[in-house]
Length: 451
Image (tube, rainbow, N blue to C red; front, side, top):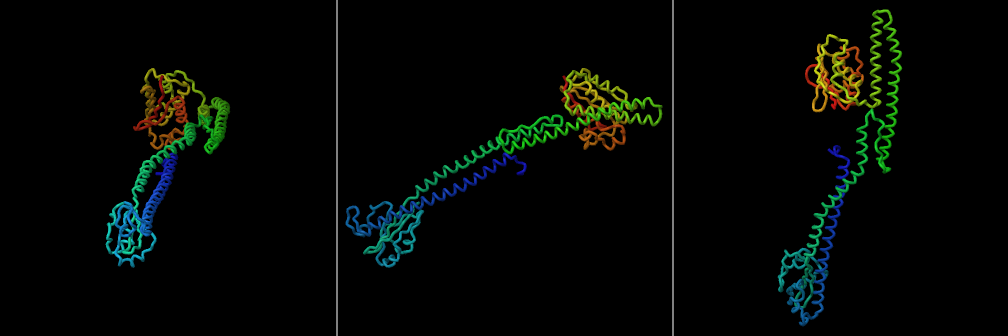
């Protein structure tokens, strides 16, 4: 599944995931540190209050204008609303003396262990409700008639408010930040890959007939620019090799025309005989092959097509009526009038001739040539009643020098270039050529835009 995702999408997902993990870890650390810090601050405040009250009791300082009597001090409730003093009976003094003078603190409203361990009930005000959200601190103070335990508290509500405010920022802020990262990454990667898309589009349009085209080189001197330069150098070498190949084929075919013409003339003037007749047939085949090679060389060279008005119906009728090596094959014409296209009359004539010649060579008894107009297109169908073309070879028959095994058995004179030339001509005229129909025999259909 991952291999089907684009590089842009994969980069966006990866960057967003990395940032999400980093933000999650940072948020967890921030919440943990802030919670601990605020809880310690509340506990320290409770200890401070307990310590201050314990010092007042131990020093016998008068409070609210009253004498410094520990019992009176224990009974007063005006010291601090967040501080309470618990009085324990004298028999427990020896046991409470074992308490460490160090201050103990218990956050989140739980009672301190030093007081909870004693089963005796305090004689003064009861402890705070354990469900309250406070940090508690306790400190024992020795007195003549017993032990005073100072209990102080500090509210944890500011801590909760701070944490709620922090979560109120993190919960919407982290998704918004991730969305921003995803959008910026998507745009940045798209901008970085834009030259790659331009290179791919240009390469997809380059064919053997326009190897002079080159891919665009981005201004940035990065890896993509070097890739484009390498591809252009490869296209240079490919264009040079193809041009040499085309020039060789054209030169060889051209140089063969004169000797073949002279040889054919001599064979025609020679005394008649079986050997001379066979040699003349072979020469005619070589001449036809040479002519095909020259035409292919011109088509590959992408020579401009002559855009003249051509009556395709007249061209089709003339080529279908021409005599062929198998006169027993009946050729039926169904040609619509006034079917005019733009192009080269010579090349269109060659296309029709190749299609009809191919159908006649493979037909059993009849060939049908049909020309009609269909939605602004001229549709030329050439059908025969022969063995047909297997579905797996519908595209292979248009390759150069391709002849099926059955065609080799039935047709000894074909070179495998007729259908390839016909398709090249159709494409150069803005049309197409394909195998059509599912009935017996082969039916080749050519389409051209009409005027």
